[in-house]
Image (cartoon, rainbow, N blue to C red; front, top):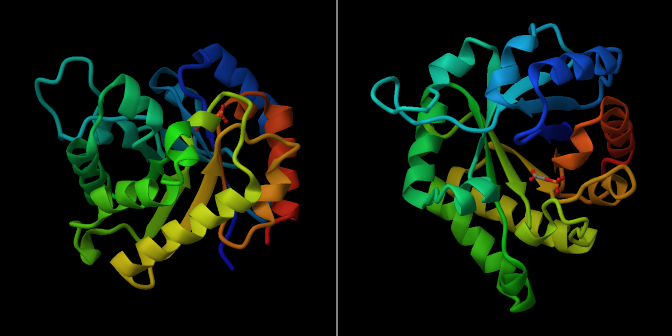
Length: 248
Ligand code: PGA
């Protein structure tokens, strides 16, 4: 059985002091039945000491070892803080920072080469969903990044996050049936590309304590990528507990 994975994406939230407070409140939470990660802002990474009950992730990096890239951060710098997961292709990076497929593929290759675990995010707009093109579109997004990467270049652990754009931070969320249909479709695509690699597929988009169970009861949904609802320690813990119990 695939082990459930819950990943908090803090986006541009929490100072170092606020992060400290979160850790204080979250450190007593233990759940042996799932994996937990938090993608924190760069400026808060130093607050985590590696003894936490969850893994550390980052939200961005630049795909080069070092050099004249003013304002950018390398993976080597992130690894120094114990970062092991890295978000790639989040719709906010695609939309606001114009990260396109070729660049995202470069990031993906780089992350794998540096032995970090990429969380590849895909998702459709509301318009595409309404036109019935969501499955095709997200399938193309996955292939655009993974297709030309040789099997030996793929990570041991593949993680895909399906996040419909219209559900991110809006309070609207995909029905669990639609999310299941998409995650099964994406799993098939990944399997065709890499054979039997271990793949976990997450749903993201306004996941909260009330709706997490409906997603986790589905066969192909292995966890969640959680923005707003990961910011408070107690409710994040409650969400994980709820999701773990109902994992299909
Ligand atoms: P949300 O964000 O849970 O606040 O909708 C999810 C995400 O962007 O990863």
